[in-house]
Image 1 (tube, rainbow, N blue to C red):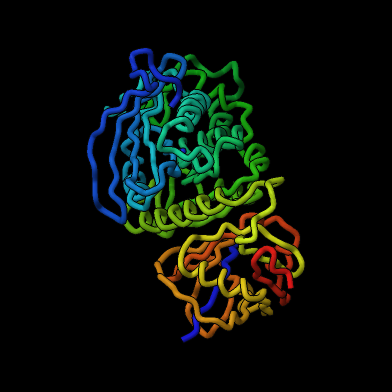
Image 2: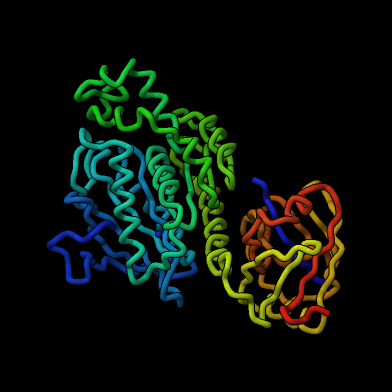
Length: 429
């Protein structure tokens, strides 16, 4: 049987150490080693500092062959603690990604928060400084690849993530926003007629949590959507269709503002994800992290030219950057193209697929996963190459197109046919 290549396009990793910390600059206490999924992982407590406020967190470190691993930093919701991020951290670690969950300095209802600070002193912008502190030092941890640090936040933690990521785009590889509370600024303006009318302290949500004046004052002039519109990186945006706390329209507006946003409505998801909605969210998050990891290995603008062992892709006459996987399928594709360039006439099918024949059987090792923008996969069927929309299927990952704004992409996403060429650099016959 002949197998096919499917190229999938969908439009769509703590602050400075406390003075009492170890000489290495962090307090580390190994807790456990766990085996649940594909990888074992260990957990370590890491205490950090934000201008004298101590931040408590736990790192989830997978036992992969990579010395430097991708890292996802989880920012919890208002009222929660680091514990809200543990289910995500466990699944990420099992999949080979590092994760760090921590307590903001304030912002928790009930017990469980081990960081310094109080609810009365907390605001979205104080939490931004907490996350900035975590982000700064996480990049120095010996197990972290600083090119692959992703911020993940839920609700108020999502709003904090959005501001932090937008203000430090050169320090992150991307953001994941879950039901982000981008309504906070509007809510504050509805609550108070002016800055002068904000009291020193006040209750929110019927006394559920008591906050200080700075909670409202700090976000009075914040333009979440204006900041999101300037962020050029990849953003995964998830919102449940049963969320009664933050209306889905706020995420829809964010999806429109983001230059490179991928928006998914989670069926049955409320404000926080459990059960099937959690599983759907995790599937999308892991697929997103696959793409981030692949993109981090591609050459940056101005980098030196690829060596002759590099497999290249042209859309029409336009070369595009691809981060190829290292597996037997890609190696077989390299060997095929080393003999001669592979020219494939693509035809539009179904509005989102570009289909063409590769004319060659390739080895495969299928996995069930969700495709995303720019993914290249080996797909079974009648010897075709497919550019596809969003899909969840069993396939072998080959690579990811990393420069989706390049000339020629619009033609690919349109309804006309196109020619692609796969070739090894130096083989230009």
